Length: 461
Ligand code: BES
Ligand code: MN
Ligand code: ZN
Image 1 (tube, rainbow, N blue to C red):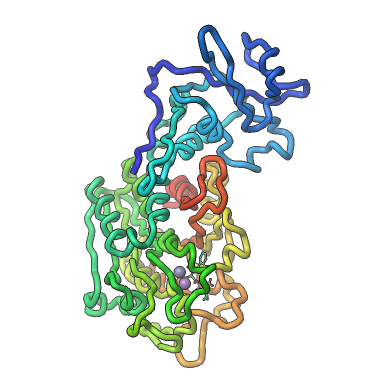
Image 2: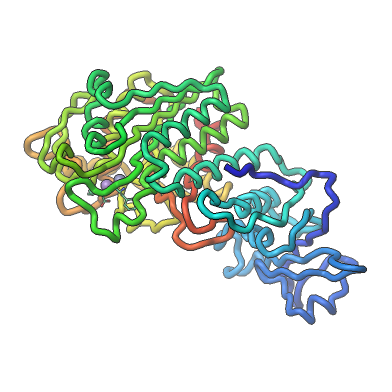
């Protein structure tokens, strides 16, 4: 993994002025001759860059931040605009020499770090060239810790299943634990049956790499928080096989695991991981003669029976056993993150993950933290009247209610059945993938909800 970094504070760096667009053109800093920006067409529009020539070379640069009052330029419309500077500026170190009042320098700097991410495991690309000196008054450690968590989540998601099966996902968890003094317990293969994790075993038993439950605990005092991440390293759909177009991206079906590991990395770097537990059911939903079948009835760890009406609704099965284990020790907060349903994408699109939570105060704290930290999330309901939809004729629960209406909600209701005993339960149905490049977010794996949770946590416990 590449390590996110700012330029050294004392580095010889060039000035970068963040320039708003005024009624009569860009609002230039003192000492900059307006003739050059005007001649080059620089208007201060969001993301516009103007290099300033100086004696014997480059003196500095202007970066447009638009008219915050105009609907087209409002920060809410596009996140991390300053990330464009990281890509557009020439190599070297830069510092922010001026910015409009009210500009969120921490947000800009985080976007810059996000833009420097590269996934270069299989192909050496252009390394990030322009580095930023962390702006005055901005907490560099906090931003670096968040970027490191984001980089880790992206790396894990981007790595294809050929190199990120259950073995490699376990190793990634062990590496993380090793960096931060956490302990890891892994229950794998037949031991899952002996230790009563039948649904994790059932979903993963057809794969070449054994299914497993990865259990990380961080040392130190702190509130009892347990994060559970869906670790389906590849989702073929099982015997209810997915069509090629739906299977194409299914290396990312461990996106929930990637996000909880990323969040754990951030918390650990900040010294805030005391009391944290991370659980990952890691499996591949594969096809073989011993694969589980449509119509099978499974008995879960909690004792509830589940009729498998679609082997492609595998995430909720493996999560159910992990959530049941988590709930047994009654954590104050239990969070699941999972690339769980296509229905969540249909409802809110790829960039706005829904989350479910019964506690209004917890939910509002998470929404606010998401808004404040450029990590938007949207609450959806655990809608009780739909409980009947997950109750089939011959078992306690149905993993894939017919009709498919309210698919994200029925999946969330299914998971909630296994969380009794936890203080608050919050479930995120994430996409974990950036379909087209945006500032700070190249196409590929992306974190969703990590910063909302990180910044909400102090207010929740
Ligand atoms: N991993 C998928 C959900 C998914 C698909 C997330 C595409 C993001 C993008 C999950 O295991 C799945 O296949 N869900 C089914 C459930 C259905 C069979 C009840 C779905 O959403 O179609
Ligand atoms: Mn599936
Ligand atoms: Zn899946």
